[in-house]
Every structure is written in structure tokens, then in C-alpha cells.
Length: 473
Picture (cartoon, rainbow, N blue to C red):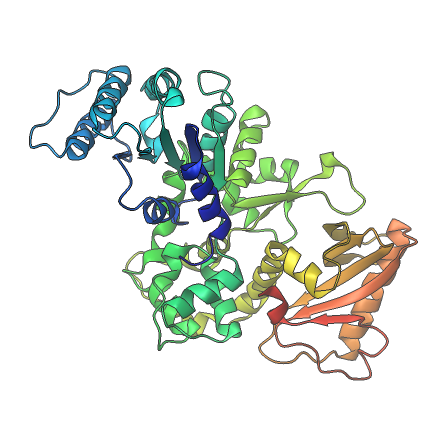
């Protein structure tokens, strides 16, 4: 098991406790939830049920009957329950019949959002099962779902029969760069860190996607096979990804598509104009669900208020798909070798690298020696006016030690050499930022780039700190 130490410890504590445990595990599709549960509880699960995608209530109940038959190790199918109340009563009867009353029982129900649709009454039956039986028994019940927002709203924050019943919640995240490196090493795949960055920028730290990567091939070769070959997993994953998580995926995809067109992020008003989705609670909920599911991030620009919140698309795969894969005709074969040499890719890679820096901000703070200092991170955008030239700053770290780290993020395939134009641009950004914000704090210029900086007369006295890609690991 690569990474997941904290999550394994949480499961171990739940299993070892002397009280009933209701464990909710959630996280986006393909992130490894089922693998985590299956690995930890291997040989210990007394009943396991996996929801059917787009299954009717009748099909889900029939699936339950087959799962109960397997748990009973029987050759005879039990009576098909007419509803979930009856189904969970059958499960209760089965568990009570097991000839080991002192041993901890484990129940695992996977993809709960697929089962508990519409008027299925699943949550009614499950609430009955937990409150009338499981909560008084030596048992661990694990419920799992890829629809993160649904799990939070319907299970974690439930106001009905499951209110405050969850005893352990695990939000499983994608691998970090360091965990991705460890994952490949475990599979005896050796890539240098620049190659790892190229792969991560394309598919993020999603274990199932990373499992497609083959040794003996460069990052470009792997991306070509996985993303552009007509049978490649990520050629068609996009629609499957959103349809598996959301009831009306087209509306969510329209928001994602709109955000992919703006590097700096978009305001709520801009999203409405671009998508033509009406303003109101529906849009608020969709934005909240996309953020809870890890696809977008919201942030307030430096010096602004909550009403000025911007939304950015931060899911690596979605960013890559919408830029390079979406518009390729279904049967057409495009090679990534050619696309990766274009100006479009050079521009996109800069944003994708900036995105990864935001995702690994704690690593960057540690590399700067400010892990113990209270900080907030922002972006900054000042539009040109009669008084000031415009300026956009990739990343600002506002520190409680009376310093602001102004970070310039550059993705490059070699050591970076600052030209006079680059240096003048950095000085201008620093000057505009100080003038517009009126800050009295010390401003340090931090350069974050792949292979570091080759010092010259233009960088001396200007760049205070240099971080290369190793800081992200």
C-alpha cells in the first residue's frame, strides 16, 4: 500500500475500538477507495454490496439478494426483498445467525449514491438497520461513494435518521507527487522527476490512471498511448467521470468547460455569462459540489472580499482533456509528440505547473522554511489603468512574519536564465503590487521553476529565493 498511512490508521482504530463504528469513505472516481477498504479488511468482510450504476430499485434489490446469497455461502437465492427495509431486516437476520457472537463483524456497502437514488428508500432502510441493530452490536459498517458532494450532504450532514451517526470519515485524496513517485517505484518503474511532472500534469495523482503507465517508455510515449490512442483509457474517461458523479452531468461539464478557458479563474457572474446557467441556489450547489469533489477550487484574490471569489479548474485530467483531447474526432489518431511541441502546449504547461504548485503549497512553504509560520496564499490581478500598468502574479504567500513572498512560476525544460525583459517584468510586478495594495510588508521575490535558475546579472539583487521541482516532492 503506497501512502494512505493516515487512512489505514483510521481504519485500524475503527476496527480495534470497543464500540460500533460507522465509517464513511468518499473521494472522486478512480482514487482507490474500494482498493483501500478491500486491502485493509481482506478476509474480514461478512457482507459486501456494490451499487449498480443506473440500476433500477428492483435491480439494486436483486443485486442485494445475490450478495446475501454469497455471504451465506448458499446455493439458494434468498427471497427477493420488496423494499430496503425488508432487505436490511434480512441482513440483520443473517448477521445474528453467524456462530461467533464475540467476533467483530464488518459490513461494506460500496457506491451508496448509486443505490440511494430518488425514491429508492435505501436511506430509510439503512437508518433502520443502523439505529435498531448495528449501533448496539460489535460491528463496523463501511459505506463508500465516489459522489463526494452527495456523501457529504446525505450522509455526513444528514438531518434525519443518520444525524451524527458517522463515527469516522475518510476523504480519500489523489496521490501527491511524492506518493506518485513511490507508487511507480513500487511497480519498478523509474522516471526522473521532470518525466513525473509531465505525467502528473496530464492525469494528476489518480491511481487508476497512473496504473496505465508503462516502464521503458517516456512520459510523452505514455501520454500518447493513454490519452490519444483510440483505445486509451483517458481518451473517453471524461464523460464517464462526470456522469458517474452527478445526476445532470451536462450542466457540471459546462461549468468545467467554461473554467478551462480562463487561467486566472472566473467570477460567478462570468460563469453565468459563459454557461447561461441561471443565477441562484442551483448554481451555488453545483459549484459547491464540484469543489467538494476536488475538480475546482475557489479563492479570494489578494485584497478582495468574499463577493469577489474566483473559481479555477484545478483537476489535472480535466484541464488536459478539454485543451487537447475533446475536439479530436472519435476515430482520428493524433500523436502527442507533435502536439507537445506547439505554443499551445507551452502556454498550457505553464498554467498546469502553476496549478500543481497550488496543490503542493505546503511543500513549497516547507522548502522556504516557513512551514511553522501562519500564512495565506492568493493570486493577484491588477488591471491596467491610467495610474498603473496591469500585473498578474501567479502565487502570493502572505506571511505572519511581516513578509509577502511574491512567487513567479515558470515551467521550463532546463535551467532558467533571466533575460533583461524577464527581470524588468518582475520588478514591474513587484512595484505595481506594492502601489495597488499599499502593503508595508517586506516583499521577497521567489522563483519556482523546474530545474532552478542560472544566476546572472539580471537575477542578482532581484530574486530572493529559488525553488526547483524537487521542492514539490
